[in-house]
Length: 94
Image (cartoon, rainbow, N blue to C red; front, top):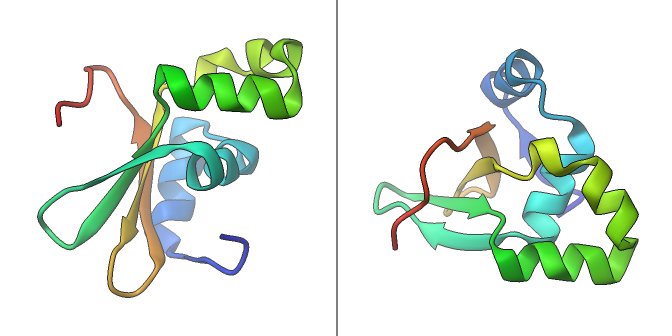
């Protein structure tokens, strides 16, 4: 997902919400995905995806960044463009 285009909106939201670029990368590489039925794909961390992160980067590294593991990213399904990022306050329902 390194060649993903990031919209200005997504950059602004990421900065406003304090979500580091590393977390955006982790979301797209390790996060679970769910279609939002509006042409987008939502990426978010689940218990399983957090375990994958721990196996790949180490438990301590993931623990230090735990404050951002409630983040989500929205990507356009058809264009492959990062539309927005944010922090979840409620559990995502399937």
